Length: 505
Ligand code: ADP
Ligand code: MG
Image (cartoon, rainbow, N blue to C red):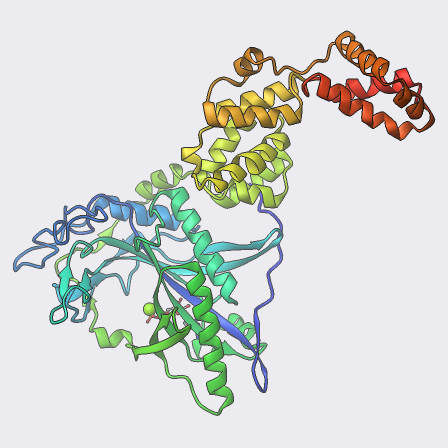
């Protein structure tokens, strides 16, 4: 499969009071594995359950309980790695990251610091047709999620809900290759699209299935190129701040913008940036310091003694690779080459698998461009207006295909097709039968059209004389004949017959 050609976008430039600045961004995305049970226990992961009802003794960290690895979760991490064209590490290991948190009863999180299951990969971030940036993925590791502290139910007390505790997360860490707020949002969007294609994470940001920690630093022009030429020498870059737990594309963009401007103002004022963890407050439109940044050694990481190293077989990885679906970049490139559509349209149709499958069902054995037009303009337009997903479409791909067949056969005009679309949308039914039953078929029988033309001309001798003198008047007759035939006459035939009768070339 060939890749679509692209050029890299320019980094976003921030004009400070004294200088121009560039921004450098690296993202750590936490993606919840789509698994029915947790990473180390059999407890359910169902969202929205009664607080503390999805908690096993392992999740509650009762003394003597031991974690047991969930093979399905490991498989999803491998699948994700393969989907990001990353190297899969046959040997990985779990480490304890020690910290106290009321919603983490173990007192540590089981994660993978030293030997993650997935190594270097990449994500192509599409900005606009022909413009994309290849962002390197540094690693993906598997870890447990923590629970949730609830502070707003009682003025005196806090509550804890351990339903999330122990749910499997994949932490997908990018290299600091993202060069602007829009790119960061597009990176998350593209990652979410790939995860959904792979069905390893549902990507539901409202439910917290995907959250991003956003690392931001600023530097002058040329600095980033020096960093890229080095062997990941981070000291070349500016000091970064990490904005925690972002769960919307819009907030990610806003937070980066504010953070970049904050850092530039401090540096231009002669100050220095403290490496710290910050929170974004969308109401005040600012980032606030949460804590100074811990280093790995603050967590006293050590190999988890309760779990053996994770050793997987290459043959297992190969079988997972063999089962991967066609991914967004490949699908998009194929749509452009197979159906001759624009890259933009291909992007719209491949935004998610359901859209793409619907389109391909309609396009099968039909004109690809025509199918793309109808799916994007009529169907998606209508679905958007009514806030329906493609799964809820009242018109199936087979029904829409039926409408297109009637146009191709010349049974209905484009205009009648839109009326037919409307009928099928609201009433359902087989398009061909509807056209037959309601007499919507286009009249191509020239005899019938001629009769209609003669009738109109006989009733309007003055207009006939005028049109003979001024050929542009012929349009008036076309309108009258279309009206007289209820819009069913083939407009091309009508036009030809009128012009012939008026003696116009
Ligand atoms: P930690 O896990 O302590 O947050 P990592 O070394 O794993 O630290 O890096 C976290 C993220 O920060 C990565 O996405 C990395 O690319 C990014 N990053 C590192 N240095 C910078 C920097 N100077 N500017 C922007 N992003 C950075
Ligand atoms: Mg981090």
